[in-house]
Each structure stands twice: as C-alpha cells, then as structure tokens.
Image 1: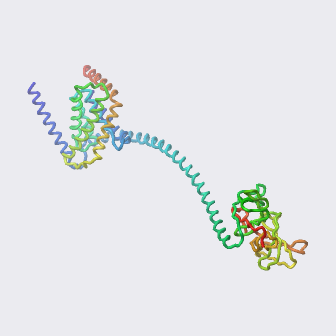
Image 2 (image 1 turned 30 degrees about the vertical axis):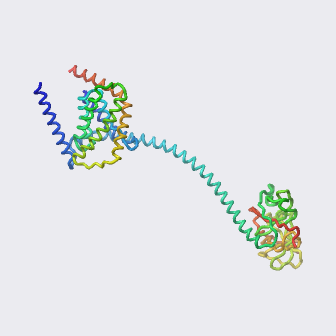
Image 3 (image 1 turned 90 degrees about the vertical axis):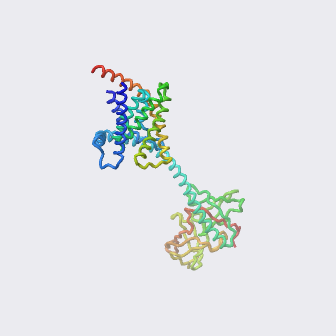
Length: 274
Length: 170
C-alpha cells in the first residue's frame, strides 16, 4: 500500500513536470496549433457560429426595441423643439418687421416738422379688410376725428371714429375717401378717391381742364383740404383713360403705402394743417 | 458516463461563454462560466473530484480558446480542489457558500492564469483595468451561481445516480 502511494507520488511529480513542459512548449511562438487544438476548434466552430448568430439576432432585437423607445422620446423632444423654434421664428420675423418700421419711422419723424403720434394697427375691418383699420391710440393720446394718418411711404387715411384708447382709420383706398392732391411734375390739382372698381387703387380725377397726367407721374397731397400736410406722397399713376365721353379723363393710381401689410402708422396731431 | 457528461457540460459552458455571454457584458466584464462549474462541482463532489474536473475543464479551455496548453488545467484543478477542500466543513445547502466561493475562485483563477502567463514569458499589463475586470467578473460569476446552483446540484445527483447504474450493469 505504501509502495502504491509512493508510485502515485512519483506519477504526480512526473505529471506536473510534463504539464510544465507542455505549458512552456506551447508558450513559445508556434507555427500552427496542434492537431487536437485545431480539431476541437473546428468541430465546435459550427455550434459557435450558430449560437453567435442567435445571440446577435436576439441582441439586435433588444437593441432595436431600446432604440424605438429612445427614438420616441427623442421625437417627442424634437417636436416640442420645433414648435418652440417656430414660435421664436415668428416672433423674430415680427420683431424684424417692427424694427424696420421703427427705423423708417425714426428717419421720417426726424425729417418732418409735424407732430406725429406713432400707433400700431390692432384690427382690420373683418368684412373688407382694406377699408378701415383700428389703431391702438385714441382720445386719451390726443387723437381726434378727422386727423390725417400717414406712414413714411405715404398717405394712409383719415381718423373716422375715436374711442378713449383706439381709433378707426378710413383708409385712403376706400371709395368713401377723397383727398386733394396734385401732380408732382406739373403741380396741377387733382382729386384722389378710392377706386370702387379696382380695389386697392386710387382713381384720379383732374380739377382743371388743362391738367395733363401721364403714367409714371407721382401724385402728392396738395394741402388744400387742410386735413393732410402738403406734399405727402399718395401714389404713382399707372394708367390714364378717357372719361365723360372723351371730354375728360381719369387715371389709375397705385398707392405707395402697402395697405395689405400695414402694421404701424403715424397720426398727424395738428388740428388744422397750415 | 460521468466524465462524458462533465466534458459536454464544460464544452457547453465554453460555447456559451464565447457566444451568448460575450454579448452580455456588465461594466465591460464577463462571467467565467467554466470556473462557475468547477467551483460548484468542487463544492458538491469534494476536493479530489473538484481537482479532476477542474483539470479537465481547464485542459478543454486551453485546447479550445487558450494558448498555453496546461496553464488553465493546472489553475482550475487548484481552484476546484480549493473549493472542495475549503467548503468541506461548511453547510453547503444554501446560496451563500457557493456564491462566495465562486467569487473567490474566479478571482484566484484569473489571477493565477495571469501570474502563469508572466512566469512563462508573456507580458501582462498590470493596471487597475485588469483588477477591475477580474473583480467584476467574480461578482458576475456569483450571479450566475445564484441562478444555476440548485439546478446544478440536482443535475449532479442525477449524473451520480446514472453513473452508478451504468457501473453496476457492466
């Protein structure tokens, strides 16, 4: 029994030495793997391949599910961001417009001697929005009925009604409106009214038989009505046509003021323009 | 019968290790399934069987994925022996002992393999990354033990039973 145990010890020592030799031998750079190593790896490779495929498939599905959640959250976040930025864009574009107007207004206000009150358009006539507009200045700001309303580019209209804090402006292109004007080149007096047949334009009627008007002529306020200051631009003649059985003529005048995009205006505060 | 079943077991563990679990890292670390089996089978079957099974599992690992043939065999034989010997006086029918020894076994096994590699002339970059990797690997392996220990114990009993049946019918 003791001899067997001794042999066993010897065998263990031999085994350890063989193992150390094997480890040392295989730790050296080898040209190729042993037959057992390569055979075992080759045999198991199809299984490895199949399991890897399955794992990749499962991982792919899990990743996709995770992605869907992330994408949903991101989508919701970005949608919110779009709304936020869109609002900002609207605000900026409004501010840009306001800035442009205020720059023009500042230039205009410093270049004129009239007492002007700046006002913002806060409403339009819902039936025909080119006829009247409402501004945010009224009696408490010194606005009175009949006052002229202008912008840096030209005539806007007349104050038609006044409340404590707002005023309604009858636009110059309304057929009810009539302004005393003159042809810039010749100084001939004319009457400028809102054109009922051609909304958004003026119709010009000569007050003198010898008046000559040609397309391209600029029409200004004459100051004779004492409502508008003198020489405020009204518009430009775009067409001249005969009227009253060829005894006279009338002309179509395109306004300088863009009535469709009117945002800010000036009320001329003098009661009577001299 | 028993050794065939164990070899198949170890091969399956190695396959899972290199495929499924390579896609499931925790904090950049992976479990050591072969060590999990060696430690737990060592606890269940005793130090000598633990050493033998560790040797077989290590040799298979060396042949299949290793480079130094015999290094893992020696290291896992030592791990299996230690697991069997150290838990002999302990009450093993709970989760604490196998989980604790899986952590220790993984740490010991991985560290000894690195030491062996250094002894046989391979440069090993000793840094915190390796320590972290081995540390997390031990804990991850213990989680696997927690999941499979009972099932493994039952399977081990079946294998012992059928091994006995086959031996008696010869």
